[in-house]
Image (cartoon, rainbow, N blue to C red; front, side, top):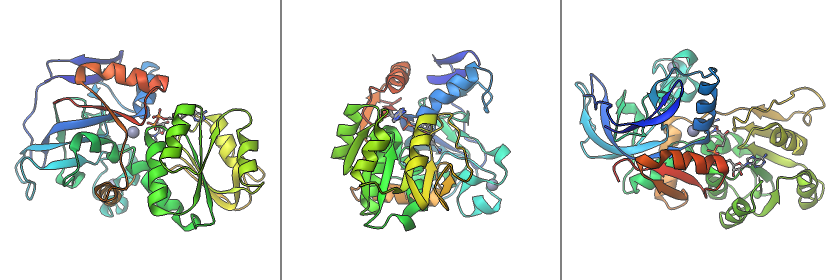
Length: 344
Ligand code: NAD
Ligand code: ZN
Ligand code: ZN
């Protein structure tokens, strides 16, 4: 089959990867959509520098949906042809975190890999999923357009849920970075809260899209961003700041704007450092670096989409145009998410 694989010397399309039979407990999924996540760019860059956590080669694509094509021995209650979302943080399955479906926080972190992140992912016509618990039914959702739900939807959903107690109707949330994750975060905030939302991005086009998705105010991420947010809030600090970039400039912006006893969630892997000490953030403010979400939360994200409250802006690319999709992601010219559709 064709597959877009990451090798030690970079990623490329191959045409000779065998489609393997599912073994005991495994499921073979015919891929509908595989989203291109900015994390892939970080992984490709780290691999080129010899600093990746993952060992190449493997097929990229950790944001996947598809149709069940075959099941291995011992797999029960999985219907052939069923449209499914694939949960992509594969833990040990036995620790305390895994047993409540939070495999993203598996206690055996060294075992934590996923399809497209160390194991073969969805930028191929087919993909092997190691266990039935990673498949969440999509119901009537269009599988190609649902692919971003599994990461660009799930990751901000988990972050928003963590901060939910602070997001009262009189609260203000700051959302920095309105790309694949950020454009979903805005919709999730609208669906789950009545908080005021201020969106920040470098790009005017992204900010226009943010207003359509329900941001109350938008601010260009330039050297005046801090003052602009303070003007909007009449000098008050924000209750919760979500950073979907994680660069030094965005971490510094967010930490200076979070109120005492507020919360800051650094989701982006932009390489910035949070100076966590007295005086660097308001008293009592909590800081965390959330990672993905649980399988139970993926079910909730899919339900939110099924209820018409969450919808990814998708640009489809064929498997021979993955490099174009990553270039557009790198250049910031996409609106929402690029999704590879290997089977058309
Ligand atoms: P994306 O490229 O689709 O979106 C990034 C957005 O941030 C773009 O709109 C861009 O214009 C904006 N931006 C870039 N620099 C900025 C700056 N200095 N100030 C304000 N806005 C800026 O990326 P994505 O796929 O949404 O991923 C976002 C980040 O989240 C990446 O670092 C990715 O690796 C990370 N990520 C983390 C997790 C997790 O579990 N923690 C999961 C998925 C992705
Ligand atoms: Zn990702
Ligand atoms: Zn575990």
